[in-house]
Length: 163
Image (cartoon, rainbow, N blue to C red; front, side):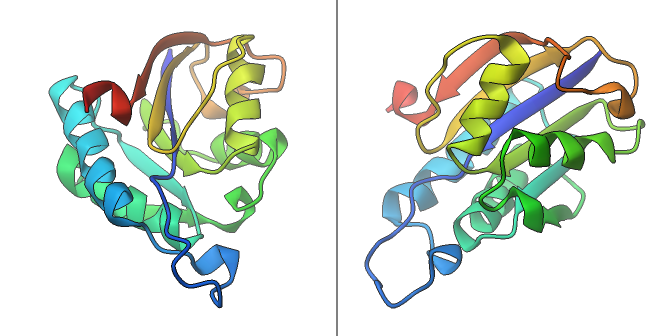
C-alpha cells in the first residue's frame, strides 16, 4: 500500500495584477496556512518521503513551508506539468516516483487536483486552498497507478477546520 497526500496550494495574492498567474505569491493567510498543514502532517505521523510541487510560485512556496514545518528532509521536486495540469498529468508525475517512497505529497492546483482526487476515490470533494487529502492506494509500486486505480480517502483536512 502507498499513501498519497494531495494538497491544493495555499491562498495566493492578487495584489499585483501585472504578475503572470504562474508568478502570483502567497498572501498573508496563505503564508500562515501552509506551515499549519506541515505541522498537521508532522503531528499525524504523515511526514512525506517525497514532495512534488507545481512550478507556480504559490505552489512552490506552499510546498517549501509545508516541508519545513513537517520535518521533511528532502528537496521539493518541481513538476511543470502540474501547473494547469489535468488528472492525467498528476497520474504521470506519480508513476515516475521511485518505489522506495511510501508516502508522497503532491502540491497542485484546481480544477485538476480536485478532479484527480475524485477520479481516485470516486468522491465529489471540494479542495479549497490549503486543503489536504490523504488517500490510501492499493498498489505496491507507483508504476501500478492507473486511471482505473481506486483509492480510499482516509482523511480530508482543511486549514479553516482548525481556525
